[in-house]
Image (cartoon, rainbow, N blue to C red):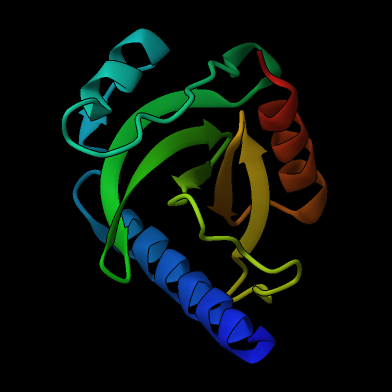
Length: 145
């Protein structure tokens, strides 16, 4: 039902915000520290069902910092971590059927959550960047080859 989907989407949004804030509070927001996508992608293999598509966007001002594995509900999610200036950006790769309803997540405490496509995978970005920077980053991710 639509209300069940909306509820699941809202819960997913809460889990993703919480995960981002936990990572910011941790000693390190990443489990694998590397600016090289050829190091980050293989690190996920064997640890998680889906190795995410990893793009190096450093030339566009969004440097890859590394990755980690986190949870939303009971699902293990690969998370790609980027940096833009002082902003840390988490890109959560969502399990197959999980999607964020458009506008499911209202900004919380200055942080935004945005749905994005990463190759053919559904993903979500959490960051405290402003809407324009976030939209630019989402566009780069969606169009990266």
